[in-house]
Length: 121
Ligand SMILES: COc1ccc(OC)c(-c2cc(C(C)=O)n3cccnc23)c1
Image 1 (cartoon, rainbow, N blue to C red):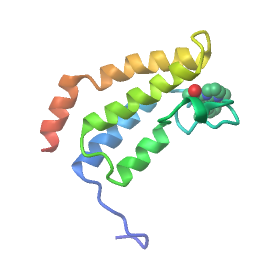
Image 2 (cartoon, rainbow, N blue to C red):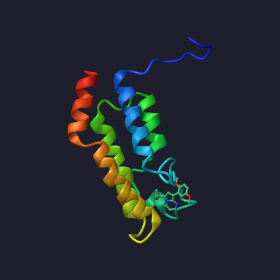
Image 3 (cartoon, protein in one colour):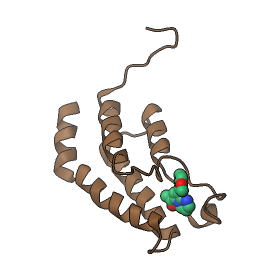
């Protein structure tokens, strides 16, 4: 082990990290990489009750918060829906969120998660 204790990732953490990497490739503008602040989005924190972003997801993987692949899928859906709630339909963020949700649901489709689940059991 190096000086800083390197913690081995569990199979679930490995699978979750791989899924997040694949999902983030569908967000080339990195609009979903970090929390949306009230500074860049006025009133955001009063409108959006469950903020979510890819950085928060990675933190939850690191802290072993997710107990299943489904929980990641739920957070991903919330993240995209937040953007479609706060941002008006004609904005680049609303459009990016709808496109991201669509491509993300292919990456996270049930049969894909089922086979991934079996491979880590
Ligand atoms: C223009 O560059 C950036 C950079 C980071 C962002 O969020 C992390 C956003 C961003 C991301 C969002 C979302 C996802 O709603 N957003 C909404 C209103 C105004 N800005 C944003 C934009």
